[in-house]
Length: 177
Image 1 (tube, helix red, strand yellow):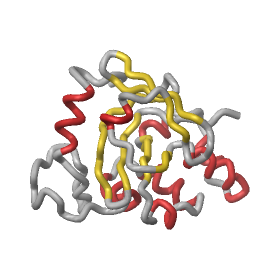
Image 2 (cartoon, rainbow, N blue to C red):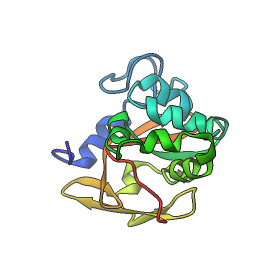
Image 3 (cartoon, one colour):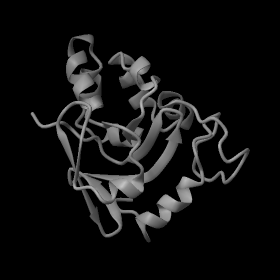
Image 4 (spheres, rainbow, N blue to C red):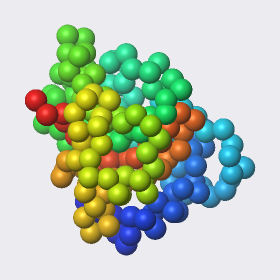
């Protein structure tokens, strides 16, 4: 699962039709369930409903970023899955969630966010993007897969939310020291 199989752009086109219906289902294979523009949920609500971002949601809550990511945006979030957080060295997540490490946690989380609604078609034409944290994120398309900082691969793109878009990634990216 390190690279996206056939073509990233084919995935983008398929996912673009899925939109962001975030009730109690993940948006893996629902095509045209209600209307084409049924009001999608916010980034936080979409992540909560998906079920595969429990660590990310807990971190956003601990960093006091819920109101920000529920705000008008728009934001583009490169969202690591629970498995991505689990791959960090033992104790890393628990350490970041401690109240005394809130600023470090905020830096890690805001490094996964870009201002604006940056869809996959635009991401694939970029070589970098400036994160809300302030540091750049390098972007490369390798064998049809979008890679961030050479370590994280976009595994699902363009999950549309009411205040932006989520691109699912398989590794946590860390801001430069």
